[in-house]
Image 1 (cartoon, protein in one colour):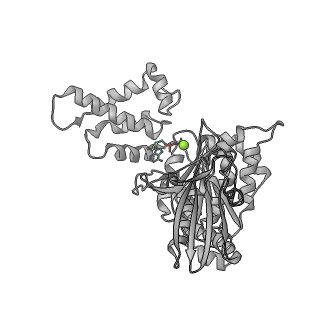
Image 2 (cartoon, helix red, strand yellow):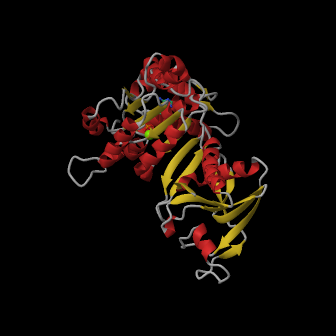
Image 3 (cartoon, protein in one colour):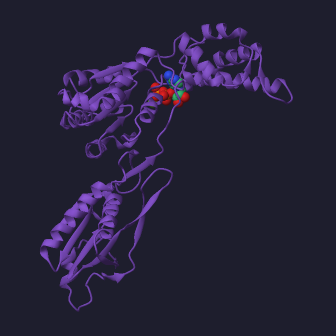
Length: 418
Ligand SMILES: Nc1ncnc2c1ncn2[C@@H]1O[C@H](COP(=O)(O)OP(=O)(O)O)[C@@H](O)[C@H]1O
Ligand SMILES: [Mg+2]
């Protein structure tokens, strides 16, 4: 009897195995298999060698383990790489062969094989371990990102992140924009039971679009913080082709949110034929393949809505809301200014002028403006608490808008103004 799982589920298989071993009246002994690497074998091969030394040098020894991430803040769990777990339950004896994925040897999946003095027990054991692995799944309710090992064997790297929490006021958006986003993501989750009872679907797709620095990533962070207990799977950079895996985790661990940032990078990955976007196509397919009543949010962000629009328009209904985030208007700039100034003492008599001259800049620009003004104040005085004068503020703004700072402005997302 055998069950297999994708390689990244190794830690959950171990959690399931541990739970299964702890349940009932089983006693167990774990025996490592030496020289297992690069060898394909199962319980059957281990049994057939009889008294002869095994031709490939497989022999019993200490069980090798690997510490795999099991939670945020560096939590890990020791997972068996290749071992026999010999269990006794009354007069029934069952042997399990547990093996982690080994992409470098062509083993893509984690496997548990079972052999028992009672055939029904072997079948039940692998079934129960699978159920326990689902129950004990350490990904549930966590914030995860899928990454691809850059050098190596295409192993999927899974990281846990601490759930961010943004105080209200840390995200500065026009009230109606924020309300729109929250309604689609948070309120649907909150009214889930009543919506389902009324025959409404829960699956939803939200696209945040707007120029770099407009706060798309910041808004994602805010939303992740607003949904404690929701499993979040983020796909980053080189991992966009792991969409199927991400969706499979989301489907299994609802309520869930799949975050694909800068989704235009997917769209740019063109296929063999012009106009084809295989990864984008796959993402839309995955969104489509999810049951209507699945409590899964797809949160996509892009700087290039123009690139995505044709593909999204051709397959309507996957993204049910597109929200534009713009660069901060005058009111928003004032709010951001207050936010970043915090408790810093400042003469605000020149603030109106500053707000006039910063049309089209990003939040990051305003943050840097305040820091520069504080630095001017520090250089002007010898010690004591900083107090920014109106002149410091104007000088800092002048410096950032100076033609020689064009590159800095670009890096702060303020474009070619000045
Ligand atoms: N609307 C906003 N409210 C508060 N801070 C913001 C806002 N937009 C941007 N920021 C700040 O600017 C930084 C960069 O914004 P980010 O969300 O990464 O932009 P984007 O993802 O749209 O390119 C954020 O980390 C945050 O500190
Ligand atoms: Mg971003």
